[in-house]
Figure 1 (cartoon, rainbow, N blue to C red):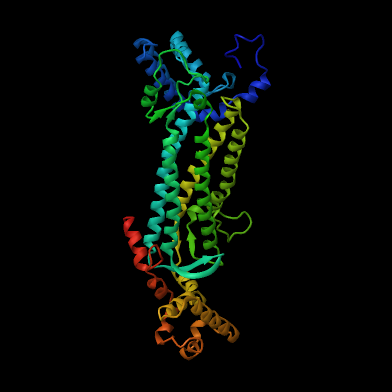
Figure 2 (cartoon, rainbow, N blue to C red):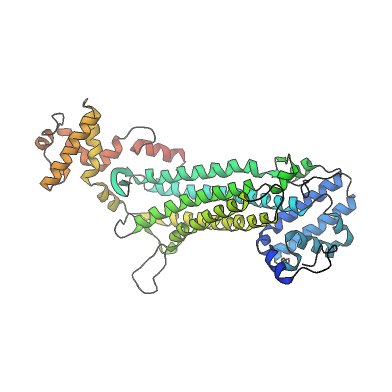
Length: 453
């Protein structure tokens, strides 16, 4: 490292420099670092700590560096350890001595905390837009297959007939919670630590509230020690991202099962499937499987950062550098997963004849039989026992429930009438559901309409 060594008699060992530098992760923070520096310079000027000419020179230089970054001309040098010193050294090359005034009333401690907060704010905005796009893709698939009936599952065993659209709407509920988590997190991330310095603040006449306002953040820190050491927001971000990824993994697992030959409920287009290197007939849903596979790494990143934080004493510690890479990596992985899942769903076709055939399994109508008897004033528990006995009778006779005659049904309950035989139609089953949030046709159509599709 070639900077900040005036108080030392030796240069930092090259191996140590390579070990402690953070330029690989910091490449993702260049834009927000410059954004924070522009706000800081503007605040210093308004507080009389920079002249108008000095501030204009600094801001112009920073904007030049930003343009260089966008064109690929500005790349971080490990010799300068991190994004902050890289920007400062490049600024000095561009504008000369005025660059040395930029770090007034600022430490890399509050600077890096600000950079990571600004980065997370940007990622939250991106994820919210991606979640909205994924929900739109799901809504569209549900609306296009609004009449498709399929088996619903518990324990991966056939349970009751449901509408395909109702199953897809369940995924929307998961994503809606993810969206709300990110949205709620924003107010805790958008707190500026700029002005806390290394950990004690400063005697110079700065205005941290103005810095926060210039950055579009809702407030600034209340305690300078906490400001530089707080990474709760990073852990919260990783939790929200991990939870969202868990939901994507559950969706991926469901779709992989539905797309298998054994189920055949859906088919992915060639645009989102890959070929086998050995078996010519294979069309593998690899992108969806990789979405599922990414989740483990995101959960690991959350555990990583929590493990780092739990052993730190009060104040800034260099261990906090290790919180940057997990946040940056997870943001990239989650963005990719959300995009791929939206593309996969948009390319997915539903095999409604296959789902209807599977939903026509008479065993899945047993709950309808129980409710039929309850509507005849039979106590629920007795109705359940009578239908259970009916199921055993059919199995022992080696026939399906739908093949039983009315006389046979009446051996188990005198309440059965001829209309009970019509219950074995899965369409009748889903149409009969009327409770709030159920798979009832009218309820699902109303949900679809509320989504504008």
